[in-house]
Length: 373
Image (cartoon, rainbow, N blue to C red; front, top):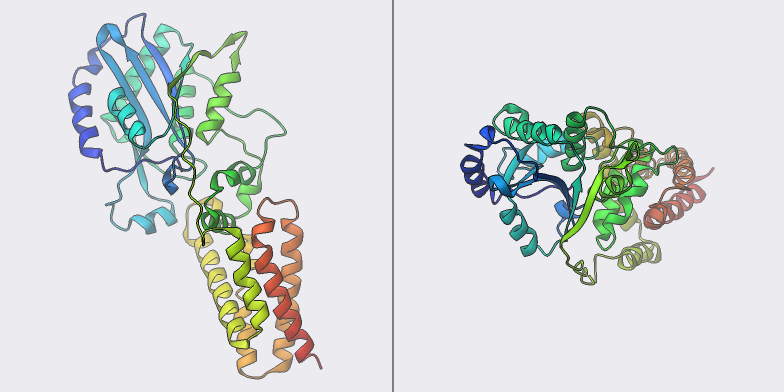
């Protein structure tokens, strides 16, 4: 989530070494501003959630730097395995505001700025801390989809400098993480489906922290410390309308439903066998990911009740023409489907997995009726 490509890393590093050489010695003036930058969403998967960064501007000292925690390196050995496992390293980087602005202008993504109401000593402490961490191992962190990303790291840094966790969620009726995330995938159906079925029960818990850029923006906008609003001023730095997602003839719910209508309509045993084999294979992957990955979002994935490895036994007993085996494994699989349906009653993605539930249910009922004694 809210990550940035490392294609510009060389430029960022040049900027880092040129601007940071003297930054440690700079004492910010009374006119210095500290602000949080909230960037709009993009069309790429890595940019669907937007981005958060910290800006420190001091015209007296010719300082205008942006610090962010959303940088990663695609050339990292075993990049995708590390991402799935949950030990991929992200890092803090810094660049000039002008570079930052030009990048988001090129990507046609908006930038909102919230100037924070901080004392002079807090501004200086934040400036010194960000620059010092850039020069140390502290700039690296292990990315976690919800718990540690570009937004949570900004929240952690600001709270650390302020001295108490004032930025965060305090509402008892906070929505679940899944409810918060789900709308961000609108227009990206298969991504929405994939993320819905790979996440386990952790994302169904109430959100206990600010982990998305837009959430942080709203939190800061409405936050007061005592009677003092923490947001001194809000500005629209780059006001761009979100690019409309072009219609796709295949990446949509209706084509997805049509695929399962064809499976049921054809009613061919070989098609159902391939279908059950694919579901079982995905179920094995979900179980493996839950044990292998350090991402807590993938643990305890109840979607294996639909993507059920028991379907392999249904296929095995069909192959062996074992009527009793087919009957009892089909009964068990139907019970799993019913439990799954009950779990999904209040989940936002029930409708998009409904075609799979119906298709599996139809075939399993057929097998039960065909193989009962």
